[in-house]
Amino acid sequence: MIYMDNAATTIHKPEEVRAAVMAAFDTMGNAGRGASVPALDASRIIYGTREKLARLFHAGDPRRIVFTANSTESLNIALKGLFSRGDHVITTVLEHNSVLRPLYECRENGVELTILGCDGKGRISCEEMEAAIQADTKAVVCTHASNLTGNMIELERVGAMAKRHGLLFVVDASQTAGVWPIDVEKMQIDVLCFTGHKSLLGPQGTGGMYVREGVYIRPLLSGGSGIDTYNEKHPAEMPTALEAGTLNGHGIAGLGAALSWIEKTGMDRIRQRELSLMRRFYNGVFRIPGVTVYGDLETEKRAPVVSLNILDYDSSEVSDELSTVYGIVTRPGAHCAPLMHRALGTVEQGTVRFSFSFFNTEEEVDLAIEAVRECSCTVRKQATENKR
Image (cartoon, rainbow, N blue to C red; front, side, top):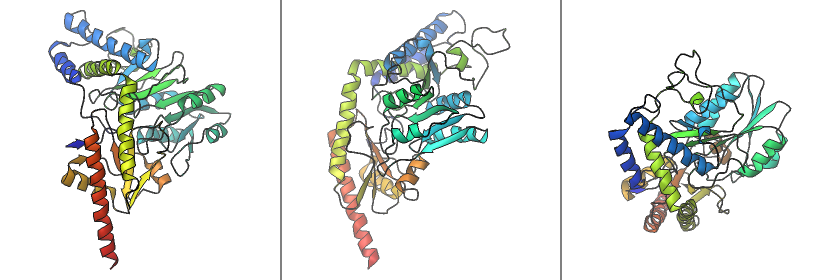
C-alpha cells in the first residue's frame, strides 16, 4: 500500500508513539483522581504533553492548553462558547465543515456571519477581510491551510489586523500543526484549535486548543474534574474549565511521544521533506493531458497537498482505480469543504487529493505520477471512444 491520504489522518507514526500507548495501557491511572502511583503517573504524562504543546506553539503557560478528542470538538467548544446573539463573525470559503457547521448553528442563534470568497486559485484577500469588518464584529475565524488546495492564510498578517481592530482571532490549525511553525504570540492568535492524528503524528482521538489568558469561553461540558467536588459549578480555572471527565490519557501519552519525535527530528526537516515530495508529484502531473490541479502551487508556503481531476471523470472512480490497480490510497470527493468546491466549480465531480507525509518516499511519488499518467490515458481514450 502506498498511503497518500495524510491530510485525513497519518497511518505511519514514529515507533515511539506505539510504544508510549502500549506502556500507558499497563501503567496509566486516572489523572487528578487520587494520589496513587498510577494516577500520579497519568498526571505527569498529561502535563508533560501540555508542556510540549506549549513549546510547540510558543504558548507560555501550559495551563492554557486544553485537551479534546480532535479539532472538531475544539472548534465547537470555541465557537459556541465565544459568540452570542448580536455578534458578527468573519470567516472564509476555505473552511472545513468543523468550522462552518458550528458557525451556521451560531447564525441560527442570532450571530451574523460574513464568509469571504476567494480568487480562481482559492486565495483569500486580506484587504477584503479587513473591509468586511463592522462595528459589531467580534472575531475572525479561519483555517491556517485549506485541506483541499493546500493554500495557506498569512496568520501573522491577519492576527495583526484583528488586534488593530480589537477582534478575537480563532485559528483552525488541523492541516499545519506539526509541520508549519505556529507562534501564538507573534501571530496574535487568541484561540488555536488542533488535532493530534494528522501532522502531529499522534493517535486518533487526541486534539486540543490553546486559549489566550483573558479570553473566556463558555464551557460546552461540565462534570467530574477531580477537584472542587463540592462546588455546584464546574471549576473556572484553566485547563479544567474546558475539560470535563476522564481525558484520553493513553492517546495523550502517544501524542506526547509524537511531539518528542517532532522535536528530535526537527519541524523544518519534516516540512522540507513533505514539501519536496509534494513538489516532485506536482511537477510530474500538472502537464499530463487531461489533468487539472487546483490551488496556488506557485508558492512554497503551502500545505503538502495536491488535489486534481482527470477530465470530467468522477473523483471517486479515479481514486478507486488508483487504489485497486496501483495500491495508492488517496481521498476523493468533497473533503468536508463545501464552499471551496463551489468556488472551484467541483461540487459534482469532487477532487482526488494526494497528501504527503515525512514517511512517504520518492519512489512512491514516482509510482503515483505514473499511475495518474496511465489513468489519464485510459480516461482520454474512453472519452474519445464515447464521442464516436
